[in-house]
Amino acid sequence: MREPAFWWRSAGLTAGLLAPLGFGYGAIVAKRMAIKGAPAGVPVLCVGNFTLGGAGKTPTVMMLARMFADAGERPFCLTRGYGGVIAGPTLVDAHKDVAAQVGDEALLLAHVAPTVVARDRVAGAAFARTHGASFIILDDGLQNSSLIKDFTLAVVDARRGVGNKCVFPAGPLRAPLAVQFAQTDAVLVVGEGTGADDVVAQARTRGLPVFRGRLTPDPGGLAALKGRSVLAFAGIGDPEKFFASAVEAGFAVAERRAFADHHRYTAEEAAELIMQAEHSGLALLTTEKDHSRMAGEQLLGALAARAHTLRVTMMVEEAGELRQLLTSKLRR
Image 1: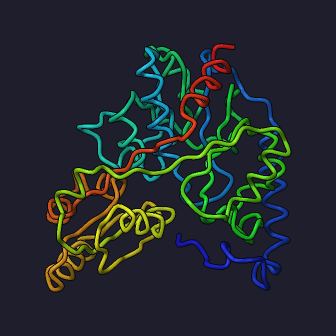
Image 2: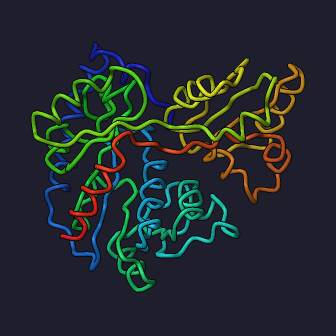
């Protein structure tokens, strides 16, 4: 599903008409969030966001997994495997599994840390524990109450914030903001912009720590395309975020194509992208998530071979403070 543009503008007529549905949806999610979860047997660090759409959760989970692996821990990532068909629990093989089975996010996470796909989070946590997890990083679980969480980090996009501040379908919020703040221990604001200023102010009023992060491109990717203009394409929660990151990294983005989040490319779309790039003399550039969805798909082999990947790493300005806070909470 493509996000409606009115989600990210001030609440207007359309949002007002959908507000009663948003109230009902928000009440249902709030009731579910209030349910007491089951213990995982090991500490659980949850990374989520307040809204539908991309905010930078996956790079954040990858950054935290590296951080704690470097500290001698054995973190396991636990994800629902959105876009895949496997219900799990199962341990992802980054070199053999494909996105159609386990989802694109799970493949990326599995390159950094052991990753479990499970629709049932409690069963997934038990599976991770029996496989040696010293703690679990729960991907996209802020609104899921099935597990007891020791710490929840909410990731917010600095440019878009929480949009029109309305609950789905009237806006992008997954539940009323106050309900979600009550389940949040800290906020990570990603990127540049003033769209999240209100969220930051509310977090500080509640006494929550606020950290600042940015997505840093891999310099190797820039060197490989030096002097070439690119056709950038992406099927993620916020394609514009990717396009902006590409420009900030120094790529000459001549054309851009946006697709829906977790988009499964067809053979026709792949051929069209290749022909469009060749006709305009452009190189193809996409995200790691998009490229992972092409892996193992025979009909997309030509696109996967031609498309360059913009790899990014989450960098947190207050990395030391974040590590210290998380370590103390998880040990407790």
